[in-house]
Image 1 (cartoon, rainbow, N blue to C red):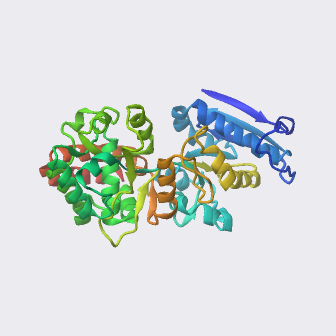
Image 2 (cartoon, rainbow, N blue to C red):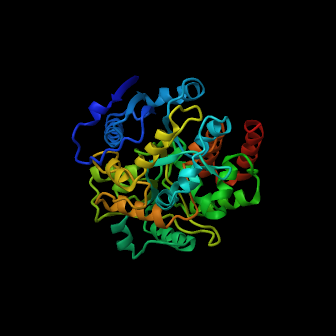
Image 3 (cartoon, one colour):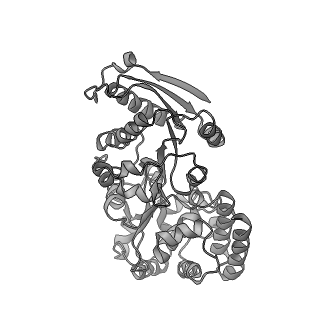
Amino acid sequence: MLSKMKTTAAAAAVASAFAVPASAELTGDLTIFLDTSNPAPRATMEAMIGRFGEKHPGLNIETTVIDREAYKTQIRNFLTADAPDVATWYAANRMRPYVEAGLFEDVSDLYAEPAMAEGLASTKGALTIDDKQWGVAYTYYQWGVYYRKDIFAELGLSEPTTWEEEKANCGKIVASGRACYTIGTKYLWTAGGWFDYLNMRTNGFDFHMDLAAGKVSWEDDRVKQTFMNWKELIDMGGFIADHQTYSWQEALPFMVKGEAAAYLMGNFAVAPLREAGLTDDQLDFYQFVKINPDVALSEDAPTDTFHIPANAKNKEAAREFLRFATSAEEQTIINNGKNLGQLPVNAGSSVDDDKFLQQGFKMLSTNSTGGVAQFWDRDAPAEMAKVSMEGFQEFMVKPDQLDKILSKLERARGRIYK
């Protein structure tokens, strides 16, 4: 599905509660391609573009909205041929092919500006390749451990901050007749979340990104250590049985019924847990614990981004749009619960009065100095992500087959990264 919206000087004159003083320094055409085709994201983006148009009435803005799945197949073609001035996409390795093909503009100059350098520090790493920045983030959401606070209170447990505390808690939870963690690995990607956190906590963000880029052997002792840490939880009965038969949604009832105490998941799990009857007095959140004290804490925070195509015609206006879209004020507006309902990337923004969004914003803005990963199936090439996540699921079911699994993944690395 493709549709277009024009924001002219006349249309931009519509009154807005967030109107800003108009300035006419920018003129000409500005074309913006969006993959935000679902109703709420589309309305949010179009309203933001309208506010930008009010500020710059000399611009003729044309917005094209493309269905998200279609966008993925069309992006290379339109970046190569008749490129827009601004395009949505994703961070980290998902943008790498277009950076390496010379199709995205280097916007490192924006990050040299104090306002952006300070406000966007948490996502800068996810937009960096070869020490240059190739876009800006406009929204993300946190991952972490959502847990049954009432079960922790019953067992006399407190939120862990170290690996030893995590394992000690898990031992007491298992002894009470419960699983420590619910998980559904039927569709594989949930196991990718566990691998992300265990590997980043064991070996650090840079190592994790090098592994995703094919620069590290799967049979490296450091990778094996990640799996041995994982095996400790598996061997003590930390995960629900038969998780390979459940989707992530089908694994929720184990936590709702109190048969499992926690779920490593993205913030999108909060709504269905609340809808299933858990109150905020029963449900809480903590940052995945430290394992190796020598590595900084990194997080999974899938990030949506704006980029300027290298073939853009109005790069001055495009840069101004990126400044506007990532400003503290706009970040507060577009990410509130009535719009995207996610986290602003600007550290100066305000966050909705929701305890999980508040905790996630604090964690990503101030407590995650190691970097922001995009999730394994975004950071690794599609074929490697599929093969490796199959390996993660197999390992969780048959942890004694680790050497065989890693050998298979190493053979896949040799084939895929040629």
